[in-house]
Image (tube, rainbow, N blue to C red; front, side, top):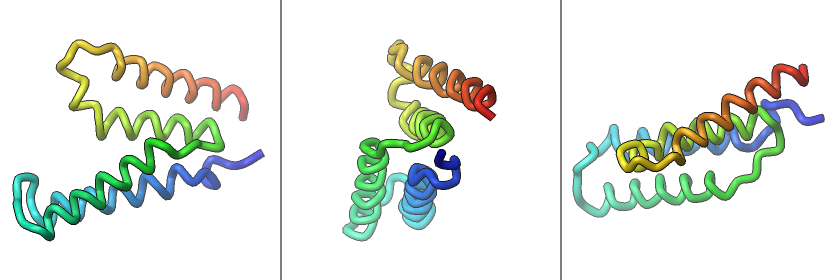
Length: 102
C-alpha cells in the first residue's frame, strides 16, 4: 500500500504554492506586464494540472480537496453554492477514514 508521502499530489501542491507565491509576492496581485502575465499563466497551468491529478492515497485525496477548497474557495464562498461545504465535508470524512485504516 502506498504511503501518503508517496502520493504525487503533495509535490504538485508544493509546486503550485511556489508558483503562486512567486506570481503574487514578486509582482503583486494587480500588477501588469508580460512577466507578471507569464508568472500568472504558469501558476494557472499548475493549478489546472493539479485539478486533473489523480491521488493514489486517501491522504493525497484529502490534501487535494482541502488545498483546492483553500485556493478556489473564494470563488464559490459567496455564491451560495454548496460546493465548498461538500468538498470540505468529503475531505474531513477521508481524514476519519484514514485514521481508521491505520
